[in-house]
Image 1 (cartoon, rainbow, N blue to C red):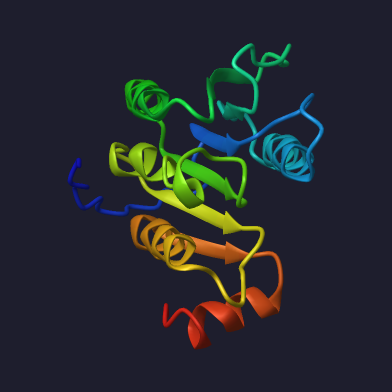
Image 2 (cartoon, rainbow, N blue to C red):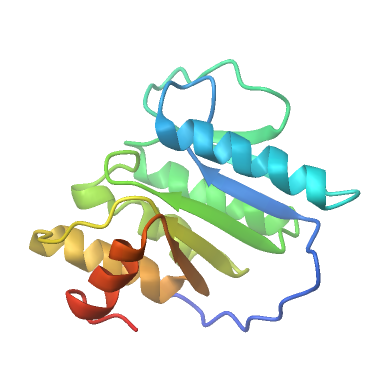
Length: 171
């Protein structure tokens, strides 16, 4: 198991070298659409952005991605998550904007995403799209680990925030 080095968070105003990670269009998935919309919106508000996308695939063949997808990897290949982190570290990425949803990352309860997060050298901002009221033990451990490895977390609903504080005991 790789130990995660503590990342000192220094927020720059309007970082330009941002990586959006989740699944991505043309994959037919709500998270793929969300990640695409988020990428496009960011680029429209941040002049001269050097934003990119790192996409997780549900097929080994991947997809015919648009040019903003600079790296993609297969969700069930744990080593690919480490390689994705190496790619992001080598690109001087300022921040990774992770989209979390159960089922898009490999391993028990999506635990392979922890391999990527533990190997990154920049801050991670995670959006939790689904927060289960009664997660099983593996789901809870993975979610708490992602939150711990993230500099900031966001929720798609006020209920998600409520669950984090009151059920998961995460401030």
